[in-house]
Length: 434
Image (cartoon, rainbow, N blue to C red; front, side, top):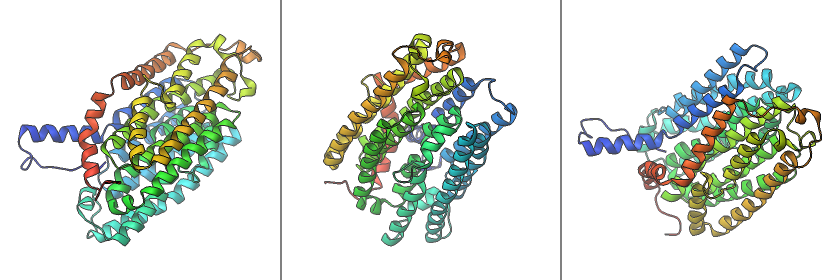
């Protein structure tokens, strides 16, 4: 979201300073979630990293630095620097500590796709800077009103560049290979953070507001396609990693649908849903990493009866999965409720299609969950598996507490984001359907 800076000389009253602090907290809601997700990823990984554990954790910290830089940057060149900096540690993390040949292939594909996807972002930032007298800081760019043709060019470039990272269908091809071949903790970080959706929210729409509103049908269409495609594709998967990956593609389609509504409630729902992703999807991949280390596989053919040996892991996995489905009482429910209600007022057909996709997504999760965790134990590795260790149980318990806290008491978090959401909506020329 667009952050508006204010000096003490112009914002001297206590009420104005309080409002500014509140706005900054709304903008940086992602920072605590990012730090927590990285910390929990390191804790669950523990000392089981081989080879070169020191290099592994150094690269994790470099990745965290770049990610926090992305969320904090108010200069577009600095943002682009941190955006590209994430590629370096991720390439080695996936390639060296991934699952054999699948990991090396996933690392190469991800690196090349993201490298190409960064080119449109660079062109968009340069075009905006040239129009603003070669100013690259975000507040200056937001103060400008680019011509319609320039807005169209910039918005399309942003949609491609950020859409690769979202990922938007059909730019999602790197996601299944990464989920299948990458280290579980690294995959949890990449899938849980949703940097591409953040880029659309903070840069694409605020910097090209007129064209973004004119192309609301494109955002709504991409979101609807993502919801349906991800849910249907998840039905056809035989590995829990791919089930969660395609479910993530479906869930992020809800965020695109929210952004296409251009209302305060939909923006609040989108941000809350992104935070919920960090908890639920990140937690699912962390649990899958634990299951991989215990059993040696996350393929459905190698599982069955896991609940008998690992009841805590099975319970946590179920709650995180139901959070993604929007179960009442979890963090996914208020977020998806706000999005659906807002979308019904602007894109009723897309909202109904999204509801259908959510039903399909429920079947796509519950079916594989039943096959993997219930029934008789069919493999010796499952029979000898150990349940969550104390540190792993603490991480799962913390994530469960957060998802229940966001789900049962959403109003404090929604009020925290209200000011920033209202300012984000005010940049738009009109409200759809008004």
